Image (cartoon, rainbow, N blue to C red):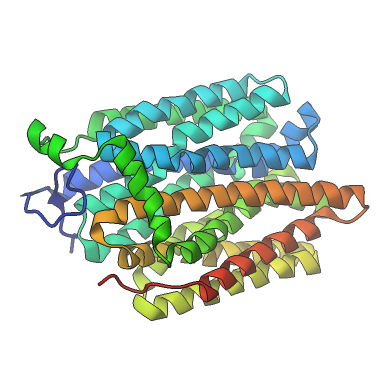
Length: 424
C-alpha cells in the first residue's frame, strides 16, 4: 500500500493543516529526482577510496593531505547545513537545490583540471558546498509530503537508492581510472551531476501558496537561524549530536577513504580488485538502511538498538585493525557495510524527540553533525596514519583503531547524556 501523501504549503512544513492529495506517482517522481542529486553526493564523498592512490601518486600527496582532501568535502557539506536549512525554510526545497547544486558541478570541473593540491582542495570544498542540500531536501520532502508513520522506512529506502552513487565509485570507477585517469572519473561525475540537476529542475515543483500566507508563515533568516541554535538548550540534543557525529562517519571513512589504500598497500590487491571489494561492501550497505528502516522498533527499544549496533560496529573496525589479514579485512569490511545502515534509526529518534514545529531545524542540525563528524574522523585518521608512518608503525591498524575508539566514544556520550524518547 502506498503511503499517504499530503500537498502541504511550503511554509507549513510540519503543521497538520489539510491540503490537496498529491498523487503517489508524482510525489515519488519528485523524490527520486531529488534522490539523484543525493546519489551524486554519495559518489563525490566516496571517490577517495578508489581515486586516492593514483591521485596521491600523481600529485605526491601524503596520507595526511589525502585525509584532509577527503575531509574538505564533509566539512563544507556539514558547515553549510545551517545555511541550507534556513534556505529551505525561506525559499523551499526546489529553489535551494537548483541554486546550490551547480556549485558542485563547477567544483568537479576544477578538480578534474587540478595540477596541484590547492586547486584540488578548492574543488573539493566547492563540491561539498554544492552537495550540502542534497541529503536534507530528501528528508524534508519526505517529512512534508509523506505520512509520518512511513518516515523512517521511506528515508531508509531513499538511503538505499542513493547507494547507487557509492556503487559507481567501486569497480566501475576503478576500471575507468585504470583505462584512463582519475581526471576522466571526475569528468564522468560532472556529466551525471548535470543530468541530475536537469531532472530536478524539470520534475520538482512544490505547491504554490498565496503571497500573504507565505509571508505570514515563513520566518526571517535570523529567526530561522536562532531557532536552530536554540535546539542546544534542549537537554537531549548534546547526546544525539555526539552519536550522529560518528555513526555515518565510520562507514564513509572506511568505504570512502581508507578501504582502497588499505587493500592495495596492506595486502597488495590491484585497483580493480579493491574496487570489487568496495562494490560488494556497497551492495551490502545499499540493502541495510531499508532493512533497518522496516525493523525500527521505536521508543526505548530503538535507543537500545542504536547503542548495541554502534558497539558492534566499533568491534568490527577494531578487529580489522588488530587482525590485519586479507580475508578478515575483506569479510569484516563487507560485514560492516551490511550493518552500517543502522544509522537510519536516528531519523526516527529525531522525529520522536523533537516537536513538530522544530523538527525541520532538528533534521538540519542532525545532518550538520553527521557530516562535520565525517570531516573530523577523516582528518584525524589522516593525521594518525601520517604519525604512524613517521614512527614506523603500520598505519592502517592505527587508523582503524582510531575509528573504533570514536564510535565507542559517541555511543558512550549518547548513553550517559540525557535522552528524550518521545515529545509530549
